[in-house]
Length: 155
Image 1 (cartoon, rainbow, N blue to C red):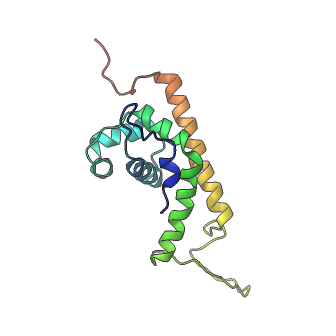
Image 2 (cartoon, rainbow, N blue to C red; image 1 turned 60 degrees about the vertical axis):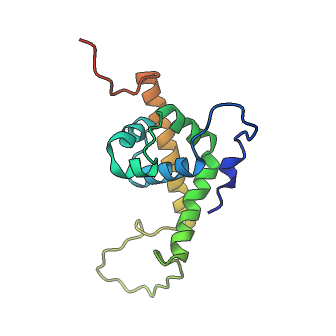
C-alpha cells in the first residue's frame, strides 16, 4: 500500500527528535481499530501487555499522546488505508467483491440487509470508527489530563 502521505510531514534535515516509523504507527492503529480498541490510552496499555501489540511496535512503548497526535494528524490518509486494505484483501483472495443478483425468492438464511456492505456503508463505518476514537480520546483527556489513567493512587 502507498504510505507516502504519512512521510511528507516529517523533516529530513536531522533537526528535531526521531519520530516513530510511520509504517509501525499505521499498522498499530489499523490493528487496534480492527480489534475494537479505539482509545489511545488503551492502545498505549496494550503495547505493554498484549503480545500482538508488542510485536507491531517492535517492543517500543508509545505514549498515548503520540498515538492520538498521529491519528489526528493523518486522519484522512488513515481512512484511505482502511478502504485500501479491503481492496488489498480482495486481490489477495481473502474476500470476494462482485455482483449479487436476487430473484426475490424468500427463504430462511443467516444473511440480512444489515450484514451487506457497500463502499458507502464501509466509508460510513470508517468515519464512525475515527469519530469514536477522537471522542474517546477527548473524554479521557478531560478526565485524566496528561496522565495515562492507570497509575496507582497515592496512599
